[in-house]
Length: 170
Image (cartoon, rainbow, N blue to C red):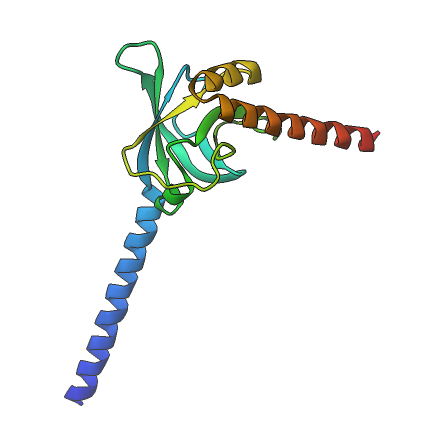
């Protein structure tokens, strides 16, 4: 009987340790890694707003504050650690409204300017933009003209697709 009790105790201990490790892993992915995005303006973002990549939520806004010089905004994100490899120092962050009713304000991450994301580290500072399409293209074009061209091409394709859908609905 004592041998059976030891086996059961060992099995219970192993199960408990496995459960604790699984909970820690889940908690780690829920809390996520902290990333900061320097932006020209907040564009209405608030703590709790979603961060999207390819239309899927990868994190949320933790804080929005003025930069040290006061001429820009620092947006602190919590990104699921499993998504850090999907981002890149060249990922473009833009403030957008969703097409839901009512629309929600989100921060959209786009890898349109990257062939293969290299991943980012926790605490890394990235760049983002708020404003209309023209303003975002102008600001992105100053830093990376090729990227601004790719963004413009993507938006034109999205616009054409939306117009096609409208025409088919009529």
